[in-house]
Length: 455
Ligand SMILES: *Cc1c(COP(=O)(O)O)cnc(C)c1O
Image (tube, rainbow, N blue to C red):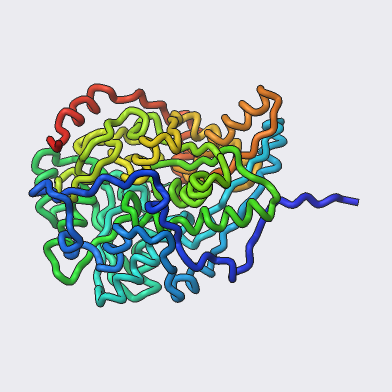
């Protein structure tokens, strides 16, 4: 008789968490405060009011350990949550490793990534406060798709500034956003002062997340009826993603296992935080001692090669200054295919836990990331997003290390999304057209020389 091995650890719908987990009160020291870009004084809630609804501003600074998830948001979450936790048995066999590999799969959301976990509550809180228009930016297109979908669910208008290279390279992402009713504009654009300034200096600028953020922030700041929404980096965004980690704690206990190492890829830090913060909270209470590893592309190494300093979140210097690992706000990362990881900065919360040595950071080269993604796809049948490939590569590295040591190791990683809209990247990889990028040392030195002077 065939012996069935359990590979999926599923929770019923009523186990969707009732509250997000805020790690701030459990950390040994507080975050450095965000500063006003004009006065360089700590920011007050009112300074952010033109951009965000008050409920999200309060979440941004909250020190409550648990923040209740609105019932309507939980009901919509139920379309794809709790997301599955899967044991990668065929990958383990292919690697011939004694390690046990588990992944939390966020690609089951209708947008194909973890982004909807926060797009939905962001749209919901805006709607509660009477907002009808949201402006946002998107790099690879995942965030824009999630926000467009959330706005369609809740009846809001959505305008997306999409980084120009992606706009040209990823017509299907654009079509998806437009299908959900969003307006999509290639950035830099002529619609904003920030966009016009970039175009005047570089008429064929490929754009960057930093530029697109300036355009979306400016749009919201100038129109009292429009608010702004960000897909990563901010505390409230990371908070909303903790549903991932909270579910995974229950699922690992269903599996009767305990992770030795927990891995996530980092662009702005939201899927990484979503998985790891609830586990880190347990570490801090002495209930577990898992190693926590953030993985970034070698071409955009903010955590491993950046400076931990106050910097702007955007190129046009409209956003508050936050203390984070940064490559400089004028740094335009090389055109790697993991568009969602091409950001010059990092979430202040992720920077803080790295600085406190509560987590570690490492890098993966583009070709190694794709090789890992292909190996994973052949074993598990899921083609990962190019961003997620970075986490896959580190999980495989850890499994091979366990093999060479001849020891068991339990590995948990976040498979943040599928790559069905990124197949051009795989086509280019198979055709041998992708390359590794060296660390752009000189450009980063130049960008870092321009850091704002804050004591
Ligand atoms: C956006 C995105 C990322 C990177 O963003 P984080 O905020 O660091 O999570 C990673 N994976 C996928 C699939 C994404 O869509």
